[in-house]
Image (tube, rainbow, N blue to C red; front, side):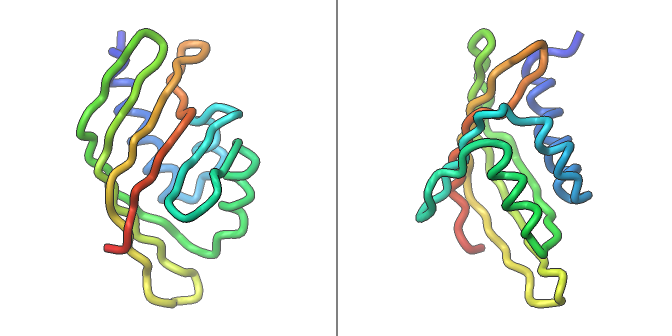
Length: 126
């Protein structure tokens, strides 16, 4: 049986792989319906539909690396702190945008699967 920490690490690996592949449907399966993303200088992005809408309009491909700094599991809830680097490459050939920093995420185990429910993203230009 896979430990909760291993399952959360696998969620991160799956998220990064699906993002790189442009598989928004897979990424959406890794978050709760009421997910909230917090980004400096922007209003909160609430729900899967808002995330999907943002992705559908993105004319970019993404690549990322994530270094998990800490995972703490508390029953069916967990939090995770990561060091994240993202490169967004416009499909029109423009210069890639690089951002890096930390994230703090809250996860909830629902029906046996860990899902992202809240994410505070502190990425800045790299």
